[in-house]
Image 1 (tube, rainbow, N blue to C red):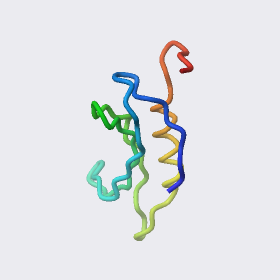
Image 2: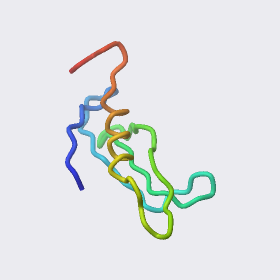
Image 3: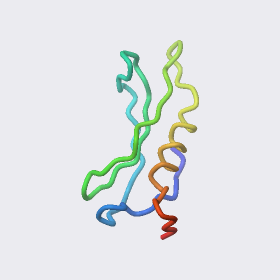
Length: 80
């Protein structure tokens, strides 16, 4: 898995990591999802994913990047 630069948690300052779940169900369809989660307070970004088609996972790197971008975005322009 690609390593991403993640900002600290905006709630507690804890370390964050990218998590992938390969069997999440969204709209009754099996989906690979990616999200960022804090190791201390368990805060999470939104879940981003794409449906599996024919047993292959397409664009999982794009879903990972969307989760990282959502986590790293700070309201008010805080650039930490």
